[in-house]
Amino acid sequence: MTAYDLSQTLSRRLTVLGSTGSIGVSTLSVVAHARATYGADAMPLEALTAQSNVEVLAAQAREYRPRRAVIGRPELLGKLKDLLDGTGIEVTSGKEAVIEAARMPAEVVMVAIVGAAALPPALAAVRRGATLALANKECVVAAGELFRRTLDGSRATVIPVDSEHNAAFQVLDFAQGHAIEKVTLTASGGPFREWTRERMESVTPEQAVAHPNWSMGAKISVDSATLMNKGLELIEAHFLFALPAEKLDVIVHPQSAVHCLVSYADGSVLAHLSAPDMRTPIAHALAWPRRITSPSQRLDLAALGRLTFENPDRTRFPCLALAEACLRSGGLSPTILNAANEVAVEAFLNRRIAFYDIPRVVEATLAADGSNRAEAEDLEAVLAVDRRARDAADALCRKLAA
Ligand SMILES: NC(=O)c1ccc[n+]([C@@H]2O[C@H](COP(=O)([O-])OP(=O)(O)OC[C@H]3O[C@@H](n4cnc5c(N)ncnc54)[C@H](OP(=O)(O)O)[C@@H]3O)[C@@H](O)[C@H]2O)c1
Image (cartoon, rainbow, N blue to C red):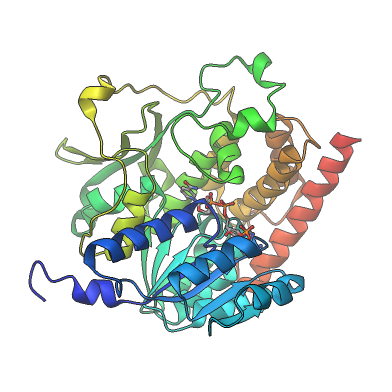
């Protein structure tokens, strides 16, 4: 392959798990851009999956022509069949069908399902040696050791899509691991960066999902508002890059232009910059180790004028401190943290609990579970702890809502 020949890169088949979400839609816009730029055959699609958004899934399938379209909720299979009648696209449904989609022979699998539900299909893609463009962070947080072990025993490659981890992947000198002093992830600070704790007590779901810089799904937007997102990302970085807790740090950077800084033993600091547009890390992950053009916004530093940095406030944002404590204690505590947070965020989005009830539920669930120091033996063990933590968190949410 010559320096300018992208044919091998663009001929790789792609599966998008969670194609109807924020990352899924951005992924398909990168595919559309690649097809418009390089030819209609670029990035052929193997499978698209969604959970319940059957109309959007069908419209995407008609436009992008995957071999298979999969809907997670079985009761929507008939509707998907009707919507794709006459297209020749295979149609399946259910949890197992989503895992089966990850097993189909696509060279690249975009993992853009939200929450720990991504874990079984992500592991299935790892086991068959695919290249994973990994947007989902919850599966690495919930089952970090297991994920790492499965990855190490496979031929799979993981290219992180989460912007900070994709940035780290680009500036980390993996051959000089001993010389890495610190990896610093940046956080925008979310919509409440300058709010008092008192004012944040009565935050609504609408206010929490209105992120100042990024356009994202509801769950991650709330995680950004509580700074749990940054805590989950520290744990994700620990497992993805095999870095100990003391080499991982967070800094608030409201302009979201710098995504990650890597400090080396000689005093050098390498940073990655881009406009806050997920299509940049998505295009990087889909084309790695080559680079393709993407439709993302370009960074305009003169227009930004100033880049500022400040330390996070762990008193107003206790979720960050909770996640950091789990990163340090290890074992299954990140599994419990993640499960309790998913339940609490959903309860907050459904107006059943208040904004600060999210850290209350997470902290109480962690305190009540005796298994947080144990290690995960296998997927079943992780899923059992995850289920128990969800039940405990749900009971706490019910109590708070009563
Ligand atoms: N959005 C961002 O900018 C961003 C940035 C960095 C990392 N991430 C990470 O990327 C992941 C996706 O985020 P997002 O913002 O794109 O989420 P989202 O907009 O909520 O989309 C989630 C996708 O997952 C599907 N899904 C939901 N529950 C499912 C289940 N139980 N089983 C199978 N599929 C399911 C959804 O299908 P339906 O549409 O049918 O419900 C949808 O396609 C998250 O882990 C997030 O932390 C996102």
